[in-house]
Length: 63
Image (cartoon, rainbow, N blue to C red; front, side):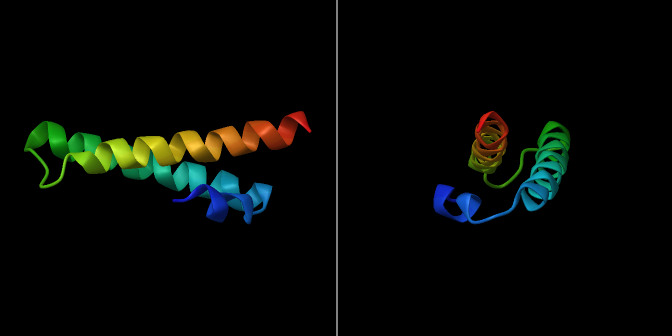
């Protein structure tokens, strides 16, 4: 998810997106532990998306 897309979302939508991304990351991590997933770079991409959304939420709380 790109930063420009994240800025357009409301705080409630960001919370929902964050929980969805965390669930996706946990599922990918479990699948990778059992047998290697086809594209392990997915883990990095999801983890970075989580960080982007969390950063935007924190930034909005501080304003």
